[in-house]
Length: 474
Image (tube, rainbow, N blue to C red):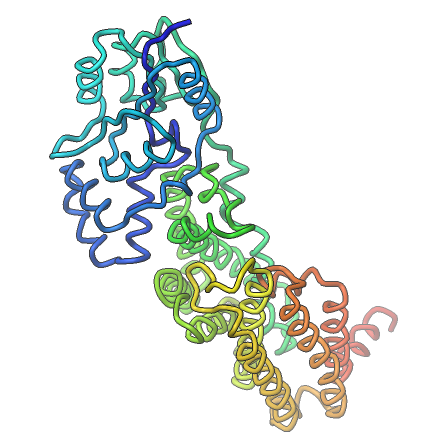
């Protein structure tokens, strides 16, 4: 058994992530102005890394570790071998990482030297001699180090950089398309059924309208997934402190950050492209939704009460998008009615998070703690009552009187609406639902029953049931 030192690369080898990119995204979330000012330093990698490390210190204890590499390091230490960490990341990141895992020696970028490729190879040969160490890496640039090491440990394919090496231990790495799909949160696309509301409210049940709304849903789903990826990248550290969110692909390190960034860019192009295909109005709504979502991810979600108002606005924009995609006018009454409903659901979302929290500390990345449960409950009740009052007033509008000859059925529909809202508030307060109330609502059988009863009463009041059944059986 060899007693030569085991030298580990950090980014992508010991860690399932890249510390420079982790720091960049953390900096965008905490100090975006200072972080964006580092972009001109891209030509000087060492200076860039040092500045990012200064702006955004990392919790190295939270960074996801490659278990097989960590096991190799532990076995080497138990056998009496020296274990070293050699990384192109800045020393202010690498040294705390080494200290946390009890690694004795560190080689890292510092003093204007970017320790990558040939520079890293020279440093290791100077310390251990030609062929005097084993080296674990994952990148094509590591070939220069493997050529001068005694044994190569290769994580993943290394971009083909390990081909032809005489002594290699291969360790599985990389990522899967399934993990990338998970990072897009496809289960959240169900919320985009809200785009059908203008079509349903206007009774515009035509194939062309339905097809246009479906394309609108494609556009909004791509836009939402694009922003979800941005949100997850900005929130990596906070997600790792969360009981469930720590399993998200970027937090867990199952999808590399560069892959996430490329996926995000592709989704943004699809969202805006399909939106423009439908209409310039739809393009504008999608662009505004993405801009507001980005502002929410970077800053607004950390502001108490403002975050709930923005959440309600983002939900309402889906309804506006449905009108823009289909060409059906969205009633002002409908928009005024749904906004307080979404205020209620925004409060429900925060109450759920607080109810499921492990302690009384403020939620990571949020401005709420358990002491705010009472205020959130009161606000959700105000939103609930406001929505019901607005719906009642709508029943007296010219539009409602034209669409619903049997006005009393609209009043009767208030009962299942109230029952559904009460159920959502109650379950959120008790922490008995999904973290996203809209996703929960579309899978909750009892709640769906209330909503279907509401629609049935409204369709009956509009005479649609008799019209449709008359066509079938007439």
